[in-house]
Image (tube, rainbow, N blue to C red; front, side, top):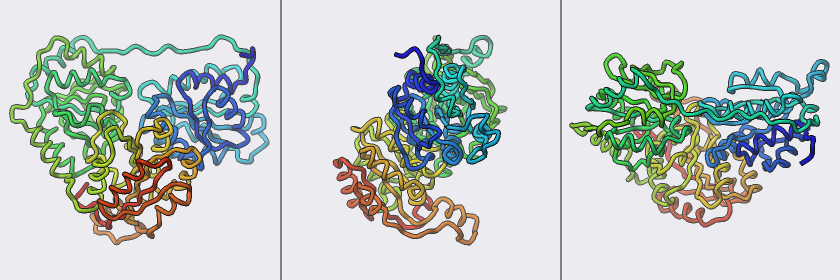
Length: 538
């Protein structure tokens, strides 16, 4: 290794140490050195068609390898194109390193073409933003990785001036912050929580994303089984325990239909354990869904409660696994609900989302579950279909269904699936989109062909913004601004070098899915459904 490296090489080397092997974006002249440094370090750069989709591909990779995603964007319009997906990473707790090129500070004093304050743009939607300097390149790189990956995770932005990226630096000592040790509660509050757990007759757990991030799923399962505590999860925490587990009540977040069964159960509980629960995923109906004055509530979270979406009787800002071990140490097993109300709720939820429709979105998801093998990875775009899919699809492991569940942005499913498929080419990967969301990112089909990956892009076609149109009708408003024309999505798939099929029945969908599973190229399946098909289903 040479005695001197470019500042960009120091940055790229630290990202490689963090496990990053892929970067996504669209280069301009201002980031050529960055791209070269990433490739030299062993991080493959993937040219995408839009920076927003590039960031979601980076997120898709993160969901499979656990390393921070990398977005590379050039000065001005390139950086701003990625804003939506960076804001999504911030709200959805996704570690991401956002690298933007910029002109040098001295040049910006008299040169204005494409020049704007990137840091001012990214500051509100990232955990931190830095401007790379020659002397601080290694320190800034380590700070960025550490901040992005510490609880709660999120994006960090680094603005890289052109001449700084090229500056030659001596190797010098590397600055690396050691990882933090897990923290568990102690003292009087822990003793009180343990007594509540022993006394509980109707405990329930609500599990969130923190559990996936701190690796405490094994401890969590042992804790819930020992005490016989039924649980539900947020959408992002689906699969933290297999959803066919007898204690699992499924997921909650955006479905009023599911809430009608789950919320009354939560209201009956005498002990509520919010375990790694981040309410940023939840709809307004979950605000103060329990009464902390009447019910005993224990909140175990990675960060202090500054959201005020709910309150608790006891708040533990601590590692989930360490806290659960401290809570249960030496305690006998739980008694469970004597009236077996959780079992009745589980049965009612199964009837609320039937799988025997002749056709429509519920039939599409039922057929998808029937055909696709266990272990299939799914991504879901925002819209009515996502709410229904999140209730009907059962996950056997974490991150088998990924989505934008905090920001709820459209256009994420296609690039998320591409990122996951890039990491796991032998595993079935399905993107589920509405037709409007798919149209936002259809150009990335060209990227899928260029990457030589073969995900399945399932598009539910009703020529309408179905969720917004439903809300419009519920408010007895005139239909305006929610309908658009039918388009030939299958032809788009073929035009970009993949396969395409249009289906209007279960047998046609089954045949298309089976064919797609055997193909070496990606497949676009357009499932045409009637408008209003989600009425009474979400």
